[in-house]
Amino acid sequence: MSQSPFEPSPLAPRRSPEELSRDRDLGFGSVVSRDSRQRLLNRDGSFNVIRSGLSFLDGFAPYHQLLTISWWGFFGLVVASYVVINFAFALAYLACGSEALVGTGAQMMGGRFGQAFFFSVETFATIGYGQIAPNGVPANVVVTVEALVGLMYQALATGLLFARFTRPTAALLFSDRAVVAPYNDGQALMFRIVNRRRNEVIQLEAQVLLSAMEPDGRGGAVRRYSPLALERNKVTFFPLSWTIVHPIDEASPLAGKTREELEADEAEILVLLSGIDQTFEQTVHARSSYRADEIVWNARFQSMFIATGTRAPLSVDVSRVHDIEPT
Image (cartoon, rainbow, N blue to C red; front, side, top):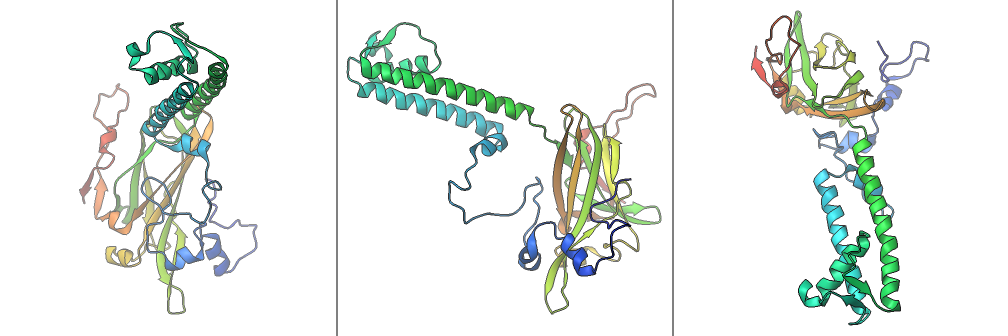
C-alpha cells in the first residue's frame, strides 16, 4: 500500500505538532484557516476562491480558457468570432469604394454590405466561386490580409479542437451524499464513486481529509486538516464502482463526533482522486467534498449491481450511485 503524503516517513526526523499542522495546511493559508467560513472545495472540484489584484492582461490566458470552457461555450465563441471577423472585413471592402467588388449584382445579396460580407466568407474560407472579384489595389490588399487571417484562424481553431479532444480528464461521478453506516462492530464514513465513461482508469488512489474548526488555544478558532485513514486507499482496476470507507475507530478524528458537532465545527470532507487513464496513459485527477450537512447518518448505499445469470457479465446501474437506505 502506498504511503500517504500526510504520513511521516519512518526515516524522517520527528517533527513538532505545529510543523505537522503546517504541512496539512493544503495551500489554503493561515488566513483562510482562521477566518473563512465558506466551503473550501465545491462539489464539482473547483476551489471556492476568487483571485483579484491582477490587471486584465496579467491574468489573461486565452489558451487555458479555451481548453477549459464548456463545449457550448467553445463552439459559441468560434461561431461568434467567425461572424465578427467577416463583418469587419466586409466593412473594409465597403471602405474601398463602390467599385471595389465586381461581379454578381449587390441587389441579389441584400445590398452592397451583403455582397461584401459573403465575398469575405468566400475569401476567408478560400472557397472562391468566381461570381465576385476584387477590383483595384485597396480591395486586393484587403483580400491579401484576409487570406492570411483565414489561414491562421482555421489553424488555431483546428488545433484547439484537437487539443480539447485529446486532453485527458477524469469523469468520475461522486455520490450526492456521504453516509455514516454500520461497519464491522462500529461505524464508518462512506461515499461512492463510479466512472461515467467506458474507458478504463487504473491505479486509482484516494486521499481523504477532514477539515474542521478547532480551538487555537488563544480563545479563537482555526481550521485544522486531519487525514482520514481508509480501509483501502488504492485499487488497481476500476471497472465498476468503489465505495471508499473510513472506519471510525479510536484513532479517527471523527471518533465520538455527532452530526450536530460536525455542523458546529463547519466540518468538510475533502476528497482527492488520482489515477491513470489507460486510453491516454496519463494521470488524471478528480476532486470533491462533503459538508457536514451532506452526510447522512445511520444509512447505507443500495446495491448498484444488476442481477444476471451466473454466466452473464457483471453489470452495474450507474444511476443508482446516489441511492441510499436507512439502516
